[in-house]
Length: 354
Image 1 (cartoon, rainbow, N blue to C red):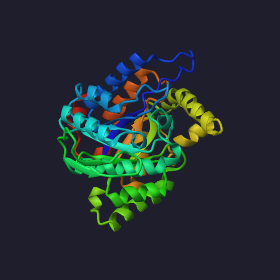
Image 2 (cartoon, rainbow, N blue to C red):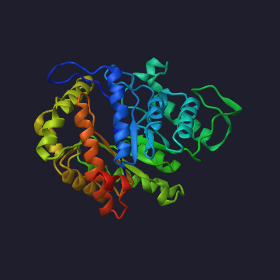
Image 3 (cartoon, helix red, strand yellow):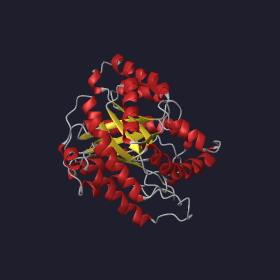
């Protein structure tokens, strides 16, 4: 199983002081986090796209390229690219460029997006929410399959036998489909034979197992080999030396971010009891000691037999030093045991830093 980090690079106010970090410092912190994730032997680093004042990243490919210059081995992916409001030609060019810079470490995680700010910003109609994604995904896949493309859709200008450059080092450039739990979305990913990233940020993870089964069934029905139908589970989490330190360290930032989003979407307020329920073995939060996080990842692997797990650590205003410590523990204490349990080789970086 590949293990990694993903982030939205939030800038929510500190719960104690009410002051938010500025964009410049948050960006510098993010680059340091990417470097450390690579140094401790993690496999993947993902960066999300948002167009809001409480997140610093609107162009993941640019930041991933900066990270590529400061890392050696870690794979670099969007998490996610809001493809519905992007131009697939530019997305392909950006990530092909990132692939060349990183010597073949780039990936695209494409999704419809859980926030809608990009639609009016770039002149798209929310009534076309699903149609935009379907059409643009079709174009993106044609772009990665062929240097010259002829394509026609309903919501973007056609392309008539034009070349798209540069071409990536990887052939094909990996494209994952990110979903939040919609059956139609997992069927689409399986039918296309694309790897699937499932965001599980609440509820009981085992309830998502039928969706993963549905994805694999759709892929098999479409004639795709089982080994090509890869699954990633993406969840909130935090690792500290002890269970209590993890809970007490993560809760303040988690509360701020989830309640802010909850007010926008009409959710009831989060409370500490719900948070603690999410930390139990059957809950969605991977917040605890290294052993607790190991146990939870392995329990989820019994549900999904997934190929990748990505942890979102730095919610909102979590102090940078705490984020770095959690990345270190995830890479040096959690990852080696997971790999050993699954019969994978332990990396040299883990041995050196353990």
